[in-house]
Length: 135
Image 1 (cartoon, rainbow, N blue to C red):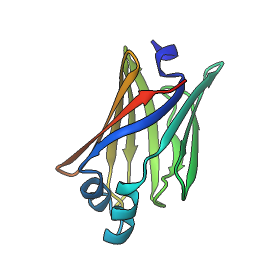
Image 2: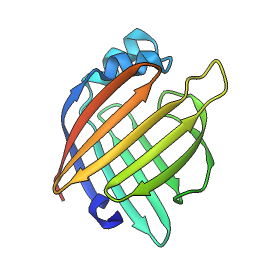
Image 3: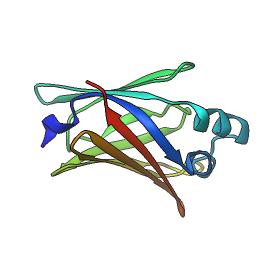
C-alpha cells in the first residue's frame, strides 16, 4: 500500500488547524498564518527510506525516515520530538513524542484513491486536512 502515498498532493480543505497548532504550542499569530497556507505535500520512497516534503509560499520542510525506526525530528514550528512512522494498510501514522513543555502529537495520513485525509491530534484537539493527488 506504500505506493499509494507516492506523488504530489495539494491541500483542498483544512478544519481546525489553527487550534491544533495552538495545542502544540505555536503562538496565535503563527497558528493563524499556518492555517491559511495551502501546502503541497510531496511523498517519495527510495528503497526503505521515505521522504515527505511540505511546501508553502513561506516555508519548506523535509522529513526522511524508515518505517518503525524512531528518530529526532524538529517540526516546522520548531518543536523537538522523538518521531516514529508506522504503516498499516492505507494509514501512515506519525507519532511524535515530546518531553514537557513540548506537546506530543499524532498525525495520521490515510489514502483513499486520489484523496488523502490528514488527521492531526494533540491534547484534546483534532484537525482534519484533505488533499487531492495532482501527480
